[in-house]
Length: 65
Image (cartoon, rainbow, N blue to C red; front, side):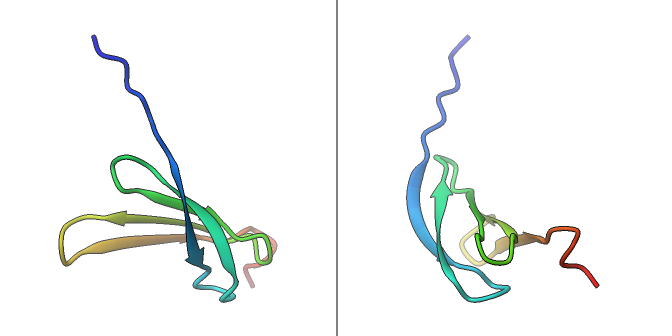
């Protein structure tokens, strides 16, 4: 059984909610995860294919009206 070694690299990404540039982390399989320090939005971005990118936004509970 092989050990699954995760390697993450730092990339910069703009928050789609407030526009602030923040640091994100990219995994070996292409998933990018970022948490905005201003609006507390968590962004998960995954490249599905050459023409398809999935972008999931999770806002904190106190920001939802």
